[in-house]
Length: 264
Image 1 (cartoon, rainbow, N blue to C red):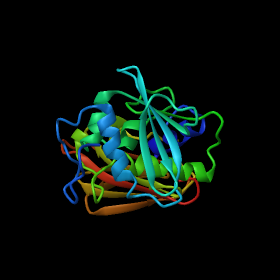
Image 2 (cartoon, one colour):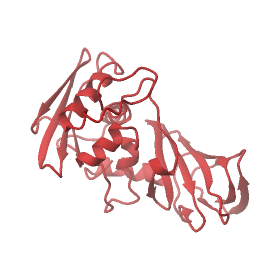
Image 3 (cartoon, rainbow, N blue to C red):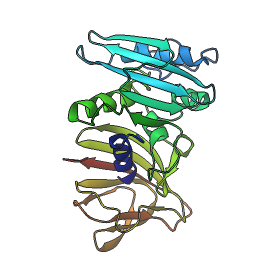
Image 4 (cartoon, rainbow, N blue to C red):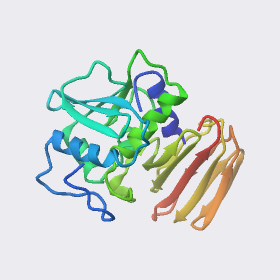
């Protein structure tokens, strides 16, 4: 889908793409005392080290714009994850955000990928990111990035993502929640209200995709054909095909979007 494509492009051009103790099986902790940036990052770090492979390593810097302060997270082989205050000259990825956005992610009210999603490079995102200028977005670096943004920010065990308009952002015409992705796979949850349109003709992707409609009814233009769609139906989208969705109903249209294959 287009917002994931732009997230990847932003990382490629260096512009783009918690908690007290985690309660196993119950989602993120929402202890109001855990409000300091350092505390939030430390809880994320403690959870993250139990989710990564032994040989995973990276360095990430967080610039908290409302506080004008920086933090960094060092991940070393052997599942050692350390949080420190201040910038780090060896950082691979830079995240720019505010305390409020970090807290929303910490509380499970927005996924990090949702916060980072953009329709175009010039858009503002609550969680902006930049790749270190000395690095190229190689397959290895891409895996580092996906692993970090997918698993560091979500401290629930097992990882839980809340679905609903209140947890979404409007990106490229629809209310979106970024779900799960990895090189060769992407997914998202979308909600469309009357008057909203997901994508425009010409917004195509070079890989296969699918729409799975789970609530409501509406219309979709797939390729050169416009069809009625409703909950309980799924449609395959061939590579390089238009895939525009909208509804004329007062009841929102809700769908899951999938993409896979080379370039996804």
